[in-house]
Length: 264
Ligand SMILES: Cc1cc2nc3c(=O)[nH]c(=O)nc-3n(C[C@H](O)[C@H](O)[C@H](O)COP(=O)(O)OP(=O)(O)OC[C@H]3O[C@@H](n4cnc5c(N)ncnc54)[C@H](O)[C@@H]3O)c2cc1C
Image 1: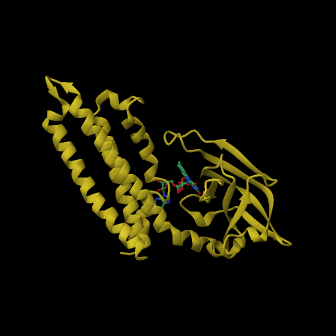
Image 2: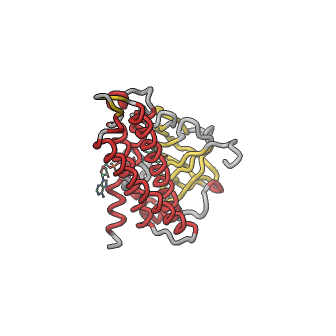
């Protein structure tokens, strides 16, 4: 993975289980020294290109989360099939797919870490993943703001630049303020992560705030472009489309609020 020779995917989500990951129905049944994996996954990033898939499966279905394991499946293994490369509204440079597992046999040594600890492994890495999404959101918002500043300083209407209207300058001033607060918060979150102190609720709050902020900023930045903002030839159009999913994947904004609320 590190040298770029192997592309991987992590297959958690299923047609019937997204936010409610404990509802995963894919099973990995033991047969001698092998697992036999059956089930289907959807919305899997890298699904079309992955050489190796980390499959979230129930090794002991009656134990719920405590019976969940992470099993490695090599793409060529018999019974494994890729479905559609799903047609998304944004992030077109990333492939997102259905994956099917029809009695896929893999050796038990393909279990990543210890059996039945898969859910714990996933939960322990979620703060880092969510902070990562927050950082991407902050960077995306900054770039959208920069585009809006450049565009409005160039575009003319009513004999002056669009930037000269008080509405434009006040809108940009508000966005600049959000970005300033956001960068300070990212630094704080990174420091907490490096010190091993970033909690699940703090990481959820970061993902919630930064992705919602990105949504506000890209939308306002697009508006300042006028009709040009709706044209794919302007970078802001793509930024707006690509930003939408940030509030959905890695846990939706509603699930982030759930995680935070549990600590109140
Ligand atoms: C582009 C893209 C890439 C993705 N990549 C991956 C990947 O690589 N691997 C992977 O495993 N998954 C991936 N996903 C899946 C993603 O993580 C899920 O889509 C996401 O977690 C939401 O699950 P869901 O789609 O089943 O929505 P649902 O859980 O069906 O949610 C529907 C609505 O109900 C709300 N809701 C659900 N539960 C509650 C609750 N308890 N309280 C209040 N509201 C609630 C949700 O917030 C949402 O608004 C990807 C998704 C997308 C769109």
